[in-house]
Image: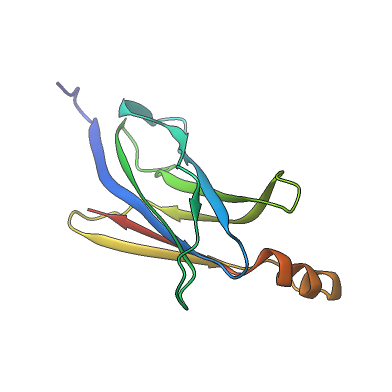
Length: 144
């Protein structure tokens, strides 16, 4: 039951996949960031996907198809929730290394929405060499 001036935002979706070059095992750490007037009514605020290997085709996809379901409550649209993702993979020694990150606002309208975020980091001479080992990251998110 809602109080006068309260509204709810319910999101059901999934973290679909990431596209890598030369990264074999990867997982996504995610969390929601929101303003002080917002609170989580139902669902999980942060979590981890399973670790997956890249596909053996030219796309080099790591497919998670990880479900997301969360409901927020607020009295003010300021601080609209955002989904924050950090993609991690294993290096040659089996240590967790960050491979990419992304942020996207949750949709403002009802209906089916698809968002993707691409980030490859700042480029420098060191980064060009490092890029060969770490790869280029593209994360696909599906919300409906």
